[in-house]
Image (cartoon, rainbow, N blue to C red; front, side, top):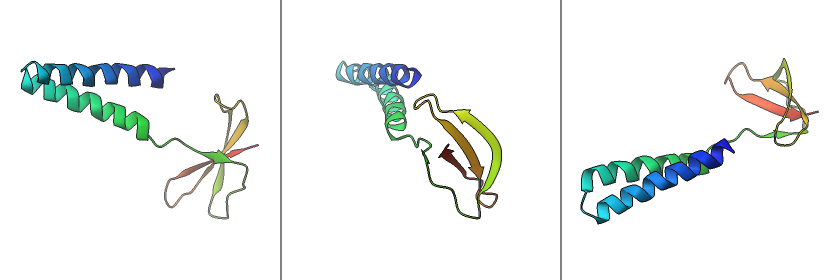
Length: 92
């Protein structure tokens, strides 16, 4: 819900920037178009954490964290790679 709301607002800002450019208000129009466009692109291309049912290999350490994924409703356990700092989510 929040993601959609931010996406819509950023789209409105980008469209307003385009309208300003077309009416001759160039600098503020460019700023609004660029900022709205960047937010839209960021939301559409954001890296979402992934989780699966596979047990991670030996470099991963269990953190003891467990939670219910709000989108799938499944239990998820968190693993951590001390070298890279990366986190891995495994459905349980």
